[in-house]
Image (cartoon, rainbow, N blue to C red):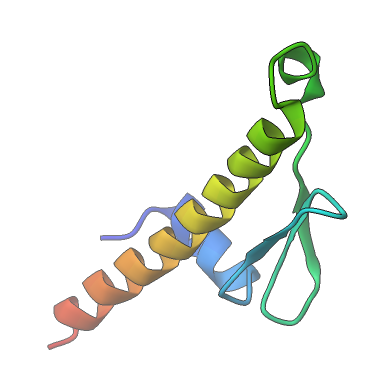
Length: 80
C-alpha cells in the first residue's frame, strides 16, 4: 500500500528529476521547477561548501527518483 503523501508526490512530479547546479534547483523531466535546494546556513562555513551543497541537491534528486522507481515496482507487483 502506498501512502497518500507518496501518491501525491508521484502524481505531481514528471520523472526523472535532475539537480541543476547553476540554479541550485531540482527540475522534472520536462524542465519544470520542482524545488530549490537551499542550505547555506551551516554549509557556508565548511570546507568545499559548494561541493557539499551540490552533493545534497544531487542526493535529494536521486532519492526522489528512487522513490518513483520503488513505488512503481511495488504497484506493478501488486497488480500481477
